[in-house]
View 1: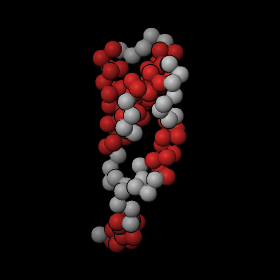
View 2: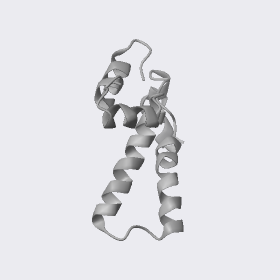
View 3: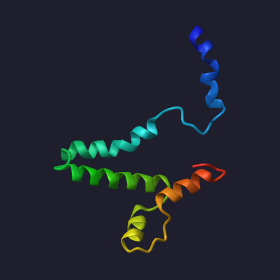
View 4: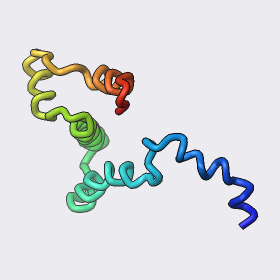
Length: 101
């Protein structure tokens, strides 16, 4: 009990920042799909294949988290239409907004 009292201000810091989650489940859920796919397929045959899979999965998750269709994003880039913002610009824009990410 004494340790809790000593760390009271640290433990109650979450009340100052209510938008920060109390757990890391979202981070673990982000990689779950990749881990399941890797276990089922047995992995990739090469380092280049692994890198390509990781990049694609990262882009897909980032687009979904930011409310952007991954197919619209890829279509814009492949056809060089560029209607969609770059992901880095989109993330910066959302982080700078008053509502936050």
